[in-house]
Each structure stands twice: as C-alpha cells, then as structure tokens.
Amino acid sequence: MSISEAESVVMDVLWREHPLSADEVVAALAKTTDWQEPTIKTLLNRLLKKRAIDAQRDGRRYLYRPLLKREDYVHAASKGLLDRLFDGRVAPLVAHFSERRKLSKKDIAELKRLIEEIDRDA
Amino acid sequence: MSISEAESVVMDVLWREHPLSADEVVAALAKTTDWQEPTIKTLLNRLLKKRAIDAQRDGRRYLYRPLLKREDYVHAASKGLLDRLFDGRVAPLVAHFSERRKLSKKDIAELKRLIEEIDRDA
DNA sequence: TGTTTCCAATTACGCCTGTAATCGATTTAT
DNA sequence: ATAAATCGATTACAGGCGTAATTGGAAACA
Image 1: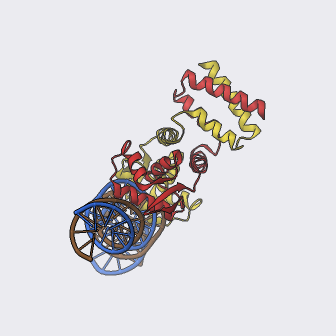
Image 2: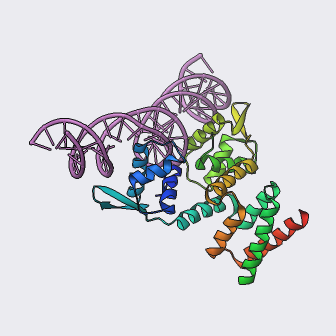
Image 3: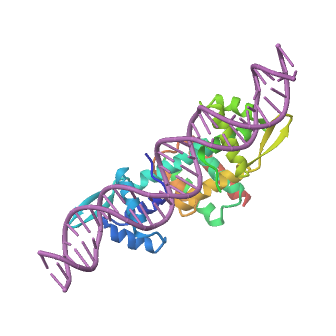
C-alpha cells in the first residue's frame, strides 16, 4: 500500500521535523498549501492507517512521527520510474536530460565530479 | 490532463508500432498482461478522450496512432519526479543510487563515458 | 432478408484520492 | 455543573482509475 502525492506532502513536513501535533502540521502546511484543517487531519489518518506514520497521545492530542523513512520512499519512487521508463538504469535517464539540453554547465560539472568520486571509491 | 499507469502500457504498444487496430493492440497486450479485451477498449477510449492518441476509421474498424510523443511523456514524468524529490537536479538522483549501492560497475562505467562525452560536446 | 457476428460505444462498479463537513467526546471556562 | 471550545473520528462526495459486462448498430453469412 503506497502513499499518494498529497500524503507525501504531509510526510515532507514530518520528515523535516517531528514529532509534531496535528496543529503544528496544519501550521506548517498553511505556508505552502491552502488545505483546510480537516483535509490535513484526513491525510494524517490515512497515513496512520497505512502505517506510514505513528501517533502517540500527548495529553489531549496526538504527536505524529514518520515510520516510513524518506530515503525508502524516495528510493521506491525513483526505482519505479527508472524501471518503467529507463530499463532500470540511471545512465539512460542522464542521457535523456542531456538530449533535452536540460543539463546546465553546473549540472555537468557536478555530475562529473560525482562520477569521479564514485569511480574512485568503487 | 495526464495519462495513468495502465494507459501508459497501452501507449507503449502504440509507441512501438502504429497505426494498430484495437484487435492488434489487444493481441500485443495479451503477451504481457492478462487484461480482457473490453478493458483495453476502455483504455483506448480514455486515451482518445485525453487526445493522447488518434483514431482513423479503416473500413469497419479504427486504426490508432499516438499523438503524445513518448519523449514528451518520459520527460514530463522524469522532470516531475526530479522536481519533487531531487530539487530538480540530476546529480542528487545519481548520488542517491550510488549511496544505495545500486550502481553496478557497468553502470558506473557507462555514466563515466556518458558524462565525458557530454562534457566534451558542451 | 433474416440471423448471426463483430466491434465500438455506453454503462457499471468498487477503490483510491483530493477535499472537506459533521459528529462526538473531552477539556476548559463560567 | 453547565456551556463553550477543542480535537480526533466518522462520514461525505465527486472524479479518476482499474477492470469489465452489456448494448447497439453495422457487416457478413445463410
């Protein structure tokens, strides 16, 4: 059972800082979305049901914290895309962005340095 | 209006070869999915409505061909993921797979060659 | 020409998602 | 102690998606 786009926005808040009360999550999201409070409560409950987050009572309210690690979420999503569109390999994706001229000088320098480092460590 | 996962599987068939009749699409998909014929017809119709494909009558049946280019679809999906998860940059994605030890010797060699080529051409 | 066959179009349906209102219980204030 | 406020839980609802059955009209066959 995987988490949706909107749910991942809520996760982002909790990944950045936790534990947080529902109110604190609502406050954080007010800056970037115009979701109403009940909407965010719903998303928190769905994430609970999916066991992506965990809630512990703190007085009369709950404190939420992530169970799903951001790394794992990012990896599942990235690998899914790579598998579906690029035969599971990273190089064709890089080639794609290159062909689309979507790599800046800076991107290229960054990649070059990174690959050299990876290659050296390997 | 964007095309769904199942719809993209149908698109894959048409990207590979076109134009194709519904029957030919069904035959192609029989190899990789166990979708029933009506399911595939539905997907073709939804793609038509989304103007991702186009149909021209050929006698009593239709021949379908893609309007949406694979390149554009791939780019939208990739850029979406990159923007959401990697600050829109390719290098952090490569770094992610590297840290996860998901890059084989071959992947690294491939990337190295590719980056050098890109860098030379730039 | 009436009947069967073939297709495309229409309709179906349950689940997930985005978005929220309402209910109910618990706490705080009067 | 009763009223008001606060929260979490429950319910809502339309649209998209996966999956498909049914219908209706044209084509082929008998």
